[in-house]
Length: 147
Image 1 (cartoon, rainbow, N blue to C red):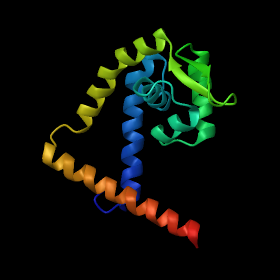
Image 2 (cartoon, helix red, strand yellow; image 1 turned 135 degrees about the horizontal axis):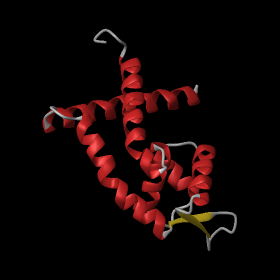
Image 3 (cartoon, rainbow, N blue to C red; image 1 turned 90 degrees about the vertical axis):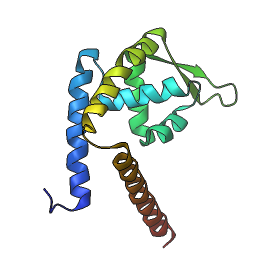
């Protein structure tokens, strides 16, 4: 695996991490993607779907499908926006809040397992490297839009 291009290695690692988190969240009937959106609502109640999509780094149609499912499961509720009648503001139900609070330690423990044996300095450097890669990709995307 040492000779894999960085993009492939990141993809493989992401899939394995997602599978592990998925297994850990399975008893709670929630996927990692659903959990991420639910968690973003937990952190910032009262935002609209577009804002939650941006925070979760997901496209709007995907976010809408996830929110529809979370609503159907009784974990979120939509409230009409006083500023824009076409928009909904998102809030957790009591069941949604309890689910996040129950699963936060699960998510934290899975992530701690991922970084076992890695020093905090190494993690900070890795985080900085990933942020730089992200910035490079964003810059490349913007240049492509301007060409």
